[in-house]
Length: 262
Image (tube, rainbow, N blue to C red):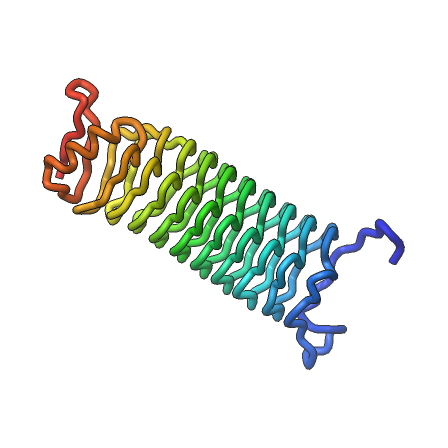
């Protein structure tokens, strides 16, 4: 085809339509700097290599059902107009979606691990829907923007500076979170209710700049300096005075103390 030709991307799950030759891997220089005008569907693709789709644009959905791991810088500077849907994806590697834009939903129901710096500078207009995500690495979502819901109810561990200077405009729903690293949400402002009933470790400055009026937390949690934003010192003192009991604490502006509810 001539340069700048635009054509809808066909379904290349099988080479030349012959089911005897499924496409399971793409050489990592083939699809860089490409604009895909149709849906990208390769349901037998198993490997997304390092640097494979750098600077690509996807105007339709991106669907690769068998892919389990995304390599280093695989989608660096890429844009997704439609949904990103990889149902069997379990691991996103280092820098995989650096500075990427997701106008549709990011739906990876089996994603378990997001590596260090994986989504640095990324923008999510649609929902981030990864219900089985368990681990977010260091700097994973630094300077990212979430305009939809961040839905990871099974998230257990958030690494150091994971959401540093991020903008979370929707709901942050992670009721099973147990550990938050140093500076994890520094300059990422939350207001209202902090609902992490299983949380046992919160690092230095983890939620610095946030202002909570209700905190639900686990028993005997390790709380570092300025870990829960405004009134952190008061919370640590009141939590300790209450024998570090699990439950809900509500801020009382009159007494300048956190009142234990149950």
